[in-house]
Length: 93
Image (cartoon, rainbow, N blue to C red; front, side, top):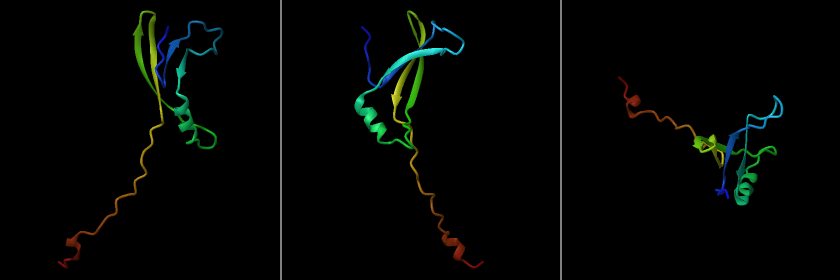
């Protein structure tokens, strides 16, 4: 039996390609329902962004890509620092 880890999965090379448009890789991802519910709350125009990380690994059956699912990286919107005139600018030289 395969051990399932929350918010993770794997991609394997597709050795059962039926035609040239078949995917090169295939696999599954297991995602916790509570994680999905939290992500749905962040939907923008009906779309939910999900971040994927991948690591190439080896197994007895060959190589594969191990996947980790997480919330998208968000940069904080920081205001630009205000520029204060230095004290030296007031000296009339």
